[in-house]
Length: 347
Image (tube, rainbow, N blue to C red; front, side):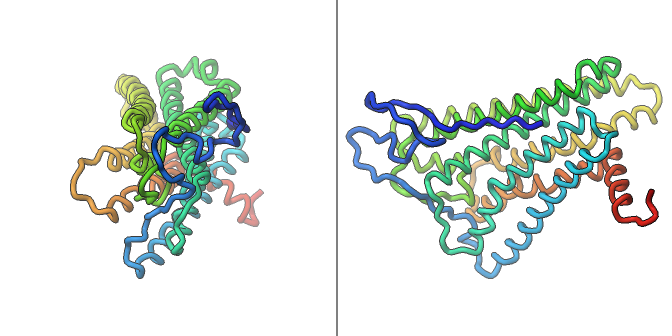
């Protein structure tokens, strides 16, 4: 179901010397001629280090519980969909893929953040930082692509119900999911390579709890820095806003179709199949907008750190709750599974 892109080696040329490198370029691969910059081999993640020490155990426990609930909630959804044959439909195939991306995105970021909360050694190697950025990009883009195709799935189901089985076959949807994973991986590795081809000079302190691209770009120097920063922002914004535009367009047609249903009960029943997906979209893009589109002002580093956790920790935490509670079919299937496993009277 999941197609994942792996690149074992990349070939690049520097001064006409060709060499193979594992996964990403080495930290001293692109020096700037005529400059005497020291090679950055590790970074320091500021994260929660400026918070009062007595508050860190409470934050650690809170985020740990949210992290574990995110993992368990998404695994529960995947297990339920896998075990219930009535849920073997394109909509729940996309939901399983979405749960997988939620788990992998969370695993790529949150464990490191939790460890650094209670540690005095908050350094991260150059390669580990590049890897974390790659995985964050990959799973973040894939998540947005999956939300987009889930919106299209609801559009076809409501606006073209007679053609649904033709347009949204299980095999075709599995192929789509695979291509989305490939696309997210390609975008992730391209952006990561672009960022880490720049020269890092001066400070190696990242004012974030993860290797966040914008925080990392502030540590780079050279003629290409401004153009690369603008390019990375344009690629990210174009991809995410493009997905959001298609989701909104799908719901415009969905609302128009629902309004043509004569009975109020029919309208409510039809719209209820979209509520969970629409809620997750609002949460996903709402928190992202709060972080990336907030007006510049005298925000403290502590408030910026807390705001960043709303997208990296709180959004994945809410997603399985929303799908479990707002999707009636999935909720009933989870209850049925629990009843089978824990009730001695069940058949």
